[in-house]
Structures are given as structure tokens and as C-alpha cells.
Image (cartoon, rainbow, N blue to C red; front, side):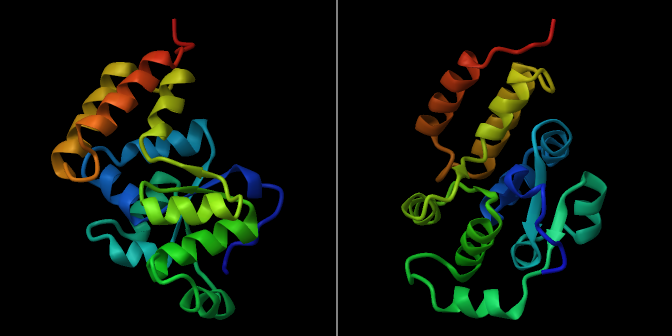
Length: 176
């Protein structure tokens, strides 16, 4: 795995394909803001292969670390649970091994992480953190979430948006 997990391990957010796609379709620069203000953002090269129009060069420009996975981890992912895709099993295994946080909206991957005590976050929750620390304002977060919903109405539906807006309203921005 090209990158060695050391003291930074607990502070890395590993984005899966659905999160990367949602931000690609709305405002991918948010992931740069997250990396600069909240925690390092990483993506697996296998995940990146799933996401069209986001390259390793794009990730480098945004400060997103692209992680190469070694063969033993690939083999372990191949033997994982059938209800979770291969790439999602790979995300889970990397997060479990390195004590990273898995950022996903995928229900099956979230359940797998919870069962094995792997930290997990929703993709939209990253913007709640950014508003809370004053990195972005609430209007921008709401606008980005609405663009995500327009591009992905099945998974980011009105119920998900309402929950996000409530959490966003509870976030106390430190910005004057």
C-alpha cells in the first residue's frame, strides 16, 4: 500500500465512490476544504477507477491522497461479504487496518463498518463540520447539497436533505 499509516492514521477520511461522485457532481473543492480544515482525505486507486472524470492529478491538486492497495488486501476483499461490493469491502478493510474513518452513504458498507467498530461518516456530514468550523457558510453547504440531490435524487432524497439541513442548523459556525 504505497502510503504507510503512522501517526496520521486516526485523522484520515477514506471516501468511497458514492461520496466522491456526489462531490464531483456538486463541488469537489469541498473535499479540499475538508482536507485543509478537518482531516486528511484519501481515496483508494480502485475507487478512483470507478469514478469517471476524476483523475489522480485532480486528487493531487485537491490534496486528496490516492492509496494503492497491496495484493494481500485485495485477496482479503475478494473473500468478503457478498452484500458489499468488492471496492466497498476494500474500503472497509483499509479503514479497519489503518484505523481510518470510512466516508460513505452506502447502507451495506455502513452496516459492515458498524459491526466491526470501524468509524463511519456520511458524505454530507463533512459539510456540517466545515460550517461548524467556519470554513464554509451555511448557504454554500445548502446549495451544494441541493446540487447533489439533483444529480443523485434516489440516494440524496428529500428525507436525507431535511436531516442534513437540521444538522446544519445545529452546527454553530465560529465565523464572525
